Length: 218
Image (cartoon, rainbow, N blue to C red; front, side, top):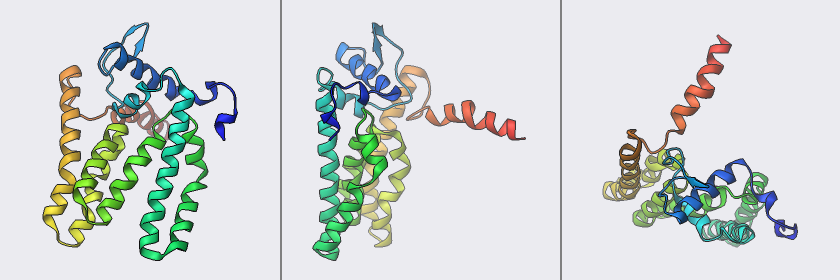
């Protein structure tokens, strides 16, 4: 429906410009750094999953929006399958409908930001853990972390279904790949900037927003 509108400027917000610059940097051989006329400093806040996705659509941004819509439909199908196998066809249809009409997701998916791709990777990761498939769960969660760093806090969550069943081997297997990916990216950041962390977003938010707000409140 969004593609009925002409052009693609409506899909490019403030964060979109940053992701597009990182995608151009990957294509220009800058490594994971933005490219605006020249290569910038290595990126420390974002991870490369979504810019890698955008690399294939730099000349056709409307096609990227179409792909994100398709990913949203895929998430609905995954939810319908999971709920339908446990509660029957009506449960599957209702669960998918709830996801399909989620307004924030619809609005975010029309922009060139991580939402649609992140959901498409995270949803099967969670459902795979609930179904007792640690290998699919850890692979998809690892990919999710490279799309949006917040996935790192979900690593213990994906192991919980196995812990409840006292399947310790499954719990370890479900966490192994995400932990390796998170550590590998933290090593990358240590190498290029001297900070052993997956993202500097947390400290930046603390120093730039939370600490000043707390100071004003006091």
